Image 1: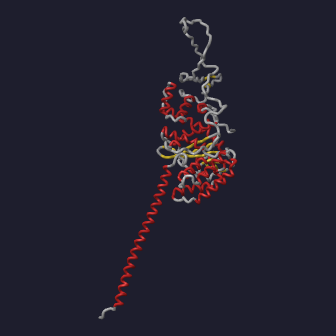
Image 2: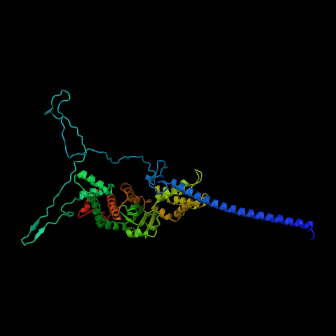
Image 3: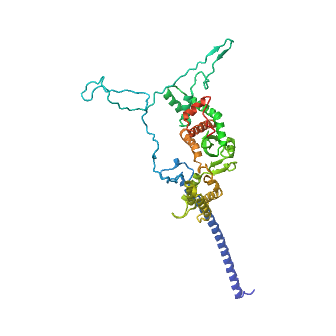
Length: 481
């Protein structure tokens, strides 16, 4: 067999080199694909970590001025809160000219007068018995008299008639037992437990010290239950009618620990009445079960909780204070250099300006609209945190009329602060006395809270309102107000 020609050998060598280079190129392609896959994974991980850092930074920077956290949660390093919605009045702080002071002042007719005479002359030392009084300086001391229990015995006489029938006199209203505490003691006990959050055991101890009669914690708890039952019977129906006929009402809800589980306290209130009640759920099921909100047909002042959207009301006023805090959160986390434009700041400025001067409504509404539209072009928009802010922007755009209804409908306030005040004390109760043990006990507490809140709106004293519950004519608000 003959030797291959030099040309054939060169061609074979060239093909071998080409094959080797193709193999190397395939290896490089595989390495590049693996590198690109790794880069894509790292890029995704970086994006996820960036989003987590942004979310954690936002959570770390959350305070009462840019979130729903209460002021009590702010640490000493928290920044100043956003400016007041009331705007500047130009008045100096403190008491204003012409106001009536509350300083303790002497009364014209004291309850008791005690005469004090000197025994001897301050000059010569002679006794002053029978000396002429040439001047008197009056000094009055306001103090509590000694407190003691007063026992009233009601004797129900039985009188015989000539017809042979014996008739016993009826007992006064509220006198149902041979021995019992009266409405005054019950009013004080109920007030201490449900308004001042003193636990029943300490309330019993305090009342024992005050009136000198031993009262058990169980009796104190029973007094609250009795008051709550009477409130449910005579007060709630009046409140339901007044809320149904109101032009404006506030609603809110908050979590409440009962028997180791989170339940929800719901409130609905107007400027004259309030009702607060607990339910296992927060949303539409609870709203339907409590019932009062479903019968209301006016303008509902509320936060952005979606469960209220389907109610058949005349209109909604979304709380401006809530959205101002959300906008402040956007401003705090904005990535532009200091002094650069931020859409959330422009929206907040517009809302505050309308609250301060409703005559600027048209101009500031245009500024708010332009800001929420321009925000969509923000080059810093990326990551999960910005998605949250963009959801806020779209909500403002969609619900603009509901955020600004206060400026177009007389009598509608811009914020839902009234509803928050109704349920704020629930948190205080939880902090002071701990969680409630039963739903029944929680609703008894809330019924008394509703009653006292309504009494305050009408200028009625707490003790007077609670004491009247034991009478045939308990205090209830007038539907005419």
